Picture 1: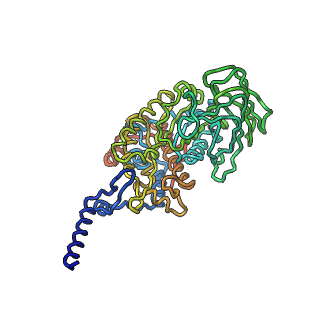
Picture 2: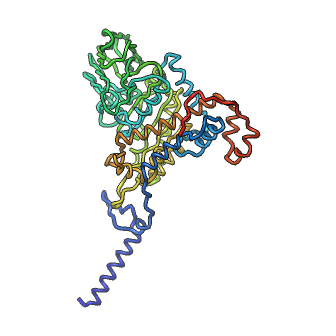
Picture 3: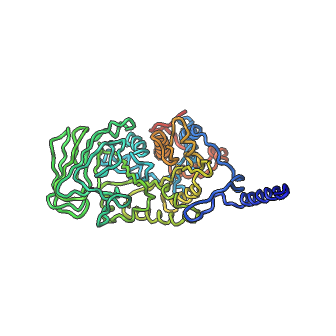
Length: 505
């Protein structure tokens, strides 16, 4: 071949490659069940996701919850006003109503005096499995309001948790979704699963020895069983190291029942034996009156299964359990199905129907939605946030607030786009090599930030007991400029001595 033809051939090939480089889509070209990839102009000119300094992010989150002022009421009010309006780590409230949690806080404060245990249900995907995140919030709230124990556990637990050890015998597990067996009905109960006992069966629990367990989880002095559809003369007998065996015998009942044993001291090990037929929806391992936080980890779930559960069973259960707060933590498991932004709206509509269903079955409960964590995915060798995740997070927040549900933005608390890759690379790692799930250390950081955000609203609730409501409204609605000009002259706040611990530097 003549040199000139060789040169023309090379130039033609380079032009073709250049055209392909300029026009080839950055996400690749789908051909059948495969995706063809080629270096593209769109990819080269796209701005790289910023590197996230995890320690700096976490330190900033921690500082955002610190009231770096004196015990002066005016300064305290300024802190809370700025927190409510500007802090990116705050819980977003419907209509910016800072009284949103007031009824809940009042109930939790009164639980011990009333001799009651008020429950918080924490539903979520595998991010909360093994009682991660939930256990941190539970410990903090039980320190504040009383109560103890690992709280609600399923009859059959295939995945170990850090807060309790358990074993079931003679029970068949049914679950509303996933790989477990399906029932011939939809009475799965508040944990979306139940254990069927026919003839006899037992559940054994042991105080945890896990190194990540919190102290309050080890204190169990009240044991209950939530069950339904039991046969005549069905009995549940508790054997443990603090009382003689005590049987609870029930008449035939198609509805939900709650049987309870009050123990004279904390128990380290116990076995509940069943005789007869019944559906065991949950076992409650609680302590003295106060607050219980129930971890309901639904691996692989996108939060769209609640409307499949029997309404009467759910309503009766929430009522018997005194459920006062429902936390929903979902979104990540839907990401693989969101191949374009058009798939976000149908998912949002699904979740809206789930929230409305839960509100109908738990009418006394307050609601909090926790958005998904950042998720890492490799794009042509570069690790970045899953495409569509930031938009999904924004849509989830708008949906929650529109449905009068508070929202905590875990994605941005982590650091936003590109943060998961840095959480994985952190030393020690804060997330696992799948670039999806937190390590125990990372889950503890997230749980701690959630607890701090939630209790900051409680601090503000406590402070407002000392200030006339009209003065609070007037002050919160001021901007900083108006505050500096007008506060000293027109808004007179009362003398204030805090009855709770104000955070200081």
